[in-house]
Length: 410
Image (tube, rainbow, N blue to C red; front, side, top):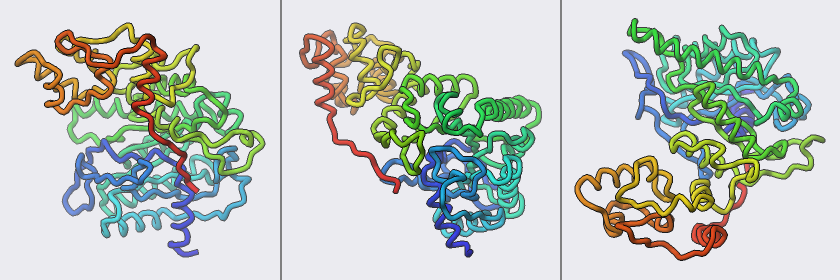
C-alpha cells in the first residue's frame, strides 16, 4: 500500500480525536534546524466547527488490540487496517511542513502488540524528527496508558505536549465500555508526566541547559454521553484532574455512535451544544475562579442548554446582584455575565481616573447586552424588570436564542 492510501485511511481514523490544540509551547529554532514552536511560531487554523487544523493530524496505525465499545478502531470492527513506519510519519511531516501546509504534528495511535511496543514506535518517530531531521516545530503525541514510566519520560523529552486520555468520566464507564483500560494506569502515567515537569522546573534553576520536558504541558480527553453520565460527574472529574495533575486542558468529545455495540445502541448522538456548554464551564473553572459545584450540583446535575454557564449561575444567584460597577472588585466583575477578564481589567483601570457612567462602558467597548441585567452604574439599574428568577431566565434565554444543530463527522 502506498503512502497516499495510508494517509487517507489514517487521517480519517483520527478525526474523532479532538485534543489537538497547538498553543503553549516555547521551543525555539536552532542553527541549521527547521520549524519553530516558540510562542507565535505556531499558526492556528480552524475548521468550521472550531477544531484546530494547523497540525498534521494522523494515527500511526488504526490497528488495535483493545475493543473499546465506542471506538471506530476497536479490534472487533471490520475496517481496513494499516500502519505507518516511524520514518514514513517523519518524512510526511517534513514534506508537509516545507510546503507550508502545517506547522507541526499531532500523532496518536491504536495499540499494536502492547502499550510499550506502540510507545517505542511513537518515540522513534519523534527521535527521527528531532535528532535526524533537526525539526524544532510543534509535536503533540498521545502517550499510551500502561506503557512503562521510562517510555513516558523519553517521549516527554522529545515532544511539546502529551495527551494521556482518561477516555470516560467515571471508573464505572471505563470498566463497562473499555474494560482493557485501567484508570490506575492512566492516572499513574499522568502523575509521571506531572512530576517530571516539576522536576525540570526545579533543575532549570540550577542548570540552565536542563533538557526540555513537555514545555506545552499535558492534556487529556474524555468522551461525554457514552454511558449517560451527568455534567456533574463530568465536571467533577475534570476538576479533580486539574487539581491533581496540573493539566493544561481537558478536551470533551461528544459521543457519536459510529460503531454498533449492545452497550451503546440505545444512546443517541450527543448534541454538540452540550459539548460547547462543557467547554464554557471548563473555561470558568480554569480562569474565572468557579468550582464545578458552583455550576452543577446534586439538584441540578446538567448544564442549562438555553443559557451559558455563567449567565445561568448569575440567574440562580440573583440575590448577589446587581453589582455597582464603580465599586466591584476584579473578582466580582468577572462574575457578571457578559464581562470577561479583559473587560473587567478595562473597568478597573478606567475607574482610576473617574466614576464611570453607562456611556463610558460603551466607549470602552464593553458589551452590556447581558451585563445590564446584573449591574448598577452610579446606583442606576439599566436592565429589564422581572419579578422572579424564572422570568429573568426566560428573558435571558430569549435574548441569546440561536439555532444549534449537531455537526457530522461522517
